[in-house]
Length: 300
Image (cartoon, rainbow, N blue to C red; front, top):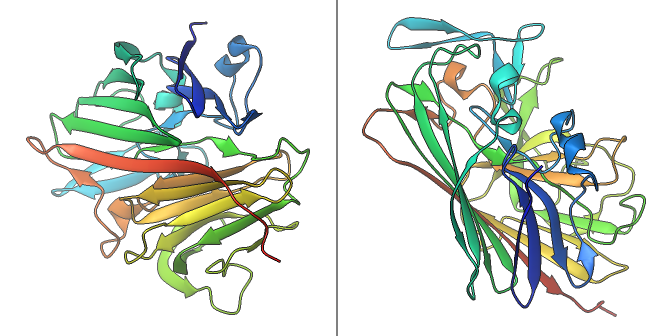
């Protein structure tokens, strides 16, 4: 399977056109993302390691309505997860540009037909740009559609800033006062839950401990940094800045990593007061997230 490597003075990234996958991301001698040594193993990737997620990141119920037309989409038990059977993590993206200068970058492109087995309307043309600028990884998505449709894209890398077998040495900060209330199928109910006084309050840096999350945090829009993750053993810190309204935090017990999936909200086409995920013909979809790496000193 094809691999493409980019590097500058601070970072090295290994990208697979298959799934738009970030296979490796190196900072300060540490590969800070989980991955498989054998690229062929990504052909079966149930945890979506490093992959680009689309058409719709997160969960959608089995149908939604646009302009009085009902669209039924492929699903399992009433829910489509991460784009379903035609998810963008399962396609080979076309490499349209590679630049190896001071700020190396790669641009991948995919054309997704409408009304394929996923059931979504609109032919979508989309691109991913991975760019290394000093000690930051910038991810930019662009898209257009031939027919009005919902769109929600993210990257599904799992971060581990120390390489340890668990995240007990990691601390997390999220500038968020609310999470989305979820039903038993992890679909948003439309309600918001205040994090104050709960295990979901990460407004100050605190240890992850043994807590497990699969939850969407509603990001404040008045902070320079939306989230930060750091490892006490390596003194590596990652700061996240995004233009998206939410970040899904997912650290399953089966993996020694944590994903910070910047995105819009699950099931938004069916919840009118959520930020819109609808893209119209003639509009340009642009989405940006930056992951910046640094070393910190322990406070005494």
